[in-house]
Image 1 (tube, rainbow, N blue to C red):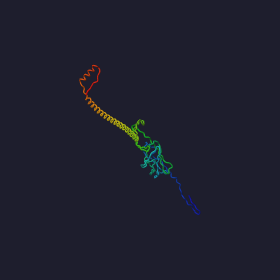
Image 2: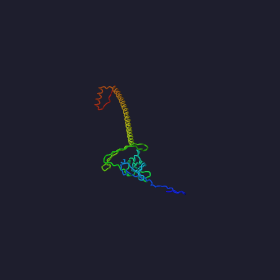
Image 3: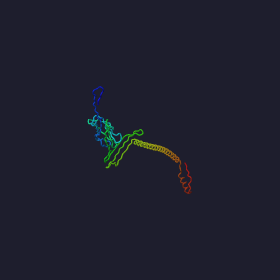
Image 4: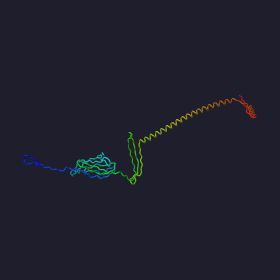
Length: 269
């Protein structure tokens, strides 16, 4: 490039060079294609490599991002599990994620790795596989609290099940306990006991009344017996005042036998 002006014998020359724009590319180097059972960590971390115009670039921030719903997982991310993890490329242009753990949903999904300046992110295909159990007997338990009508309630579930050779559950049982139901049962039992005690108290009161009535009757009978005894004694005394002539009595009896008719007996004092 030249620059000229009037009166100058020679132009000024500028030497310029057009260079290609920096091309930043991020690629999934390793960790893709893995499978982990739901709830467990994947064996290998995810590694993304960043190059600029084909040269590995260090010091760039790479963000790994997992799906926010469905089959996915969480990065350890320094002890605070999250669906994102930001790491810095090393001298070889590699950014390595923290440990990635599958969530509880089975399925296949992609985790992306992005860097500023790159036209598109790198992707890692991962799979969460469903939990499979071998043949045998298994036990389980779960406890916690829920809120119903503003009241906290403790619950507990426990049980056991059997898995057959085909991987299917062939039998099992479980027991569920809700503290509200337990308290209700206790209250119902207490109410029944209280009702039973009321009936017993009523029966005892009735027995007491009958006993008092019997005692009164005994007192009345005793008084009547005493009165009868006194009257008997008085009658005996009155009878004792009468005397009968033995000879007259014999004649009277004989006359009765002859006539066949009884006569009034005469008594004298």
